[in-house]
Image (cartoon, rainbow, N blue to C red):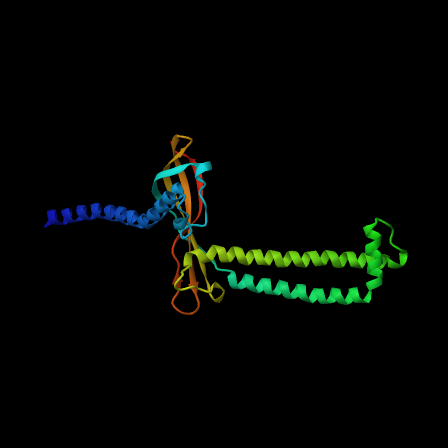
Length: 242
């Protein structure tokens, strides 16, 4: 009986690390498949495949072809809120502020039309502004500066919306079931995958260590979440292999 228990314990001790190793391999399987598909497509310039799986272009001419990528570690997942709703509202607020400002500017311009024209003409020829128009020149300069500030605020807001939409949409994009991201809250989930690969540039092959950042979008709107697929967000070469 004692021998049987001892044998059971030994088998259990062996089984635990084997199970852990198997789980680690299984966990890296999907990541390795995606990463190998990415580099195989990059090597031959298969844009049709790449457009569905990556936001990052690996430039083969500058960085070399990548063969035999092998996952050595999968990092912890990181989450951040999807900010698209917030940024769309910020853009709407910026546009509303610009429109309100434009109405005020028009009212001032209408009330000081002749003086503004005299100021503009003086500035055009690098001449002096009449003393009676000096206050208008100061005010109109301020109006022009604030016009540019509002335009920049709208432009920045537009770019922020576009960047967030671009970050989120590839993971959940579907021709058959299009998704309006602006209707969802959710999360942007990312993780870093350590990879060893052979990189060949100018007929010279070296082993290199890379970090491939994977990302996916999880959408929520009170129903069952929509879990997007993992896509490649970035690739960095950490150091040559030794």
